Length: 143
Image (tube, rainbow, N blue to C red):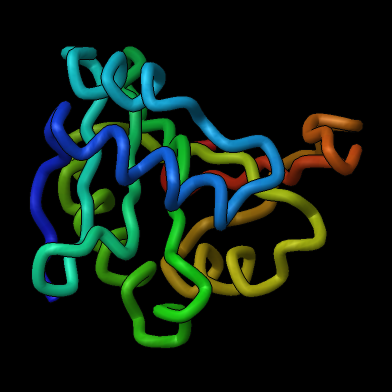
């Protein structure tokens, strides 16, 4: 499997992947906008020519904000999310911290983030919808 930077031409495939992974998926246009955003960096993981995962972050002042990490269900438990997260962390080494929100029920993701040094620092009530759920704010670096 190969990890490379996302391109605008990946947007259609990423929209389909997002529909499989999230209850509120991004549109194709959203992925195109992110590919054109100078403050955003996204990576895709390919199994031959098929995109099986992606992850990305925004640079906001002196921090990285992870937006999404998504892996197709049939490709989970292969350390793909770990590889994407490692790539994002390496990119964000120059920042004071990396921040993210995660659904409080997403125990596998929370465990992954904790393994990489993220700490729970807060709860955002009803942050997610479809279904409505609290978000846990996690930070790696200065709090």
